[in-house]
Amino acid sequence: MHEMSLAEGVLQLLEDAALSQGFTGVKTIWLELGQMAGVEKEALRFCLEVVTRDSLAHEARLEIIELPGQGWCMQCAETVAMTELFGACPQCGSHQVQVTAGSEMRVKELEVY
Amino acid sequence: MCGTCGCGAGETRIDGQALEHEHGPHYHVHADGTAHDHDHTHEHDHSHEHDHPHPHSHATAGIGATASHAPGLSQARMVKIERDILDKNNAYARDNRAHFIGHGIFALNLVSSPGSGKTTLLVKTIIALNGRLPLAVIEGDQQTDNDAARIRATGAPAIQINTGRGCHLDAHMVGRAIGQLALPDDSLLLIENVGNLVCPAGFDLGEAHKVAILSVTEGEDKPLKYPDMFRAADVMLLNKCDLLPHLEFDADLAVENARRVNPDIRVIRTSASSGEGMDEWLAWITLGCLQTAASRQAKLAQLVAQD
Image 1 (cartoon, rainbow over the protein chains, first blue to last red):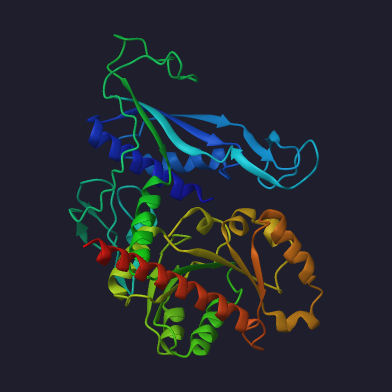
Image 2 (tube, rainbow over the protein chains, first blue to last red):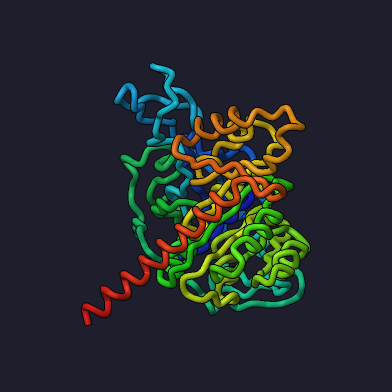
């Protein structure tokens, strides 16, 4: 995934929210990132710093909440932990695992002024 | 480059014309000197938002939320957002998809590495269809309109989107392009994405299917290296198959790898040079077009019946 585009997406969300919620600056951004979202945390942090320069979030602190990966293994018929998309089930080794969590990338909440 | 956010959007060109872009209702100036006031807003507040425009505590919100949030200490307040980063693109994609469905347009998003033979395959596809289906092409590249020119040489309408620094097409660019193309109802739209196996996977354009093209001059393990793309695709064209006798490429292994990341992916082995697999590929396209057109007509009939 391309972190620069995602950072732009974050800034757009902030600007939209600033309009609808009536705030002018962002102090903290809480971002939920699934472990398997394919996002490089540090690259995103860097890009966000670049795109928010001179914006309402120029001094915002970024808090990344990492969400663990989970999948439904069809062989085991139960929820199993996953560390990579398309990884094998840690219990039976099958690749028939449907991802159920860990691919999130969302702005959860903001501290604003 | 956009002066507001530093993104490459100001460099986006559709057939050479700058594409406006939004960051909310403000004026801003693009690198080429044009200013936009954005009151064409395609605003998409499908608000699934959970906004609380009042200060509140976060006893259950977890990480960090309460850390600097003692009432009275600062004027800061908390705002719940709970929105996916790709929301904006997804909203445009929904509009595009609604447009496609409403007009019976079968839209395909063709994705691959650079050099997989996408454009040649498209040219051959258009020639082979020989006017049986009304069709148009959207070409995505960072620079040049070479590919659109190759498509236009077949007689098919084509529109070139130059993404500037951008590494993928997004739904907004495609929405603007379909506005310019004025496609007839029940037609085929082929969208050739920027050659890139990473970013286009995450950006829905509103297409019916993503079609991934893997050429046999690449590695068999590409589906494993770039799983997002092969998972997002419904069809994989294993292209340049005429070259197989000259290569050590294990085609079965490549297919197996693709199925490992996407058990349901449909694989068609093609060669634009020898014509191998073209019948199957054309049959799949034709069926998709017929089904899309039929469902539009069925909906229309239903509406007429209701009146």
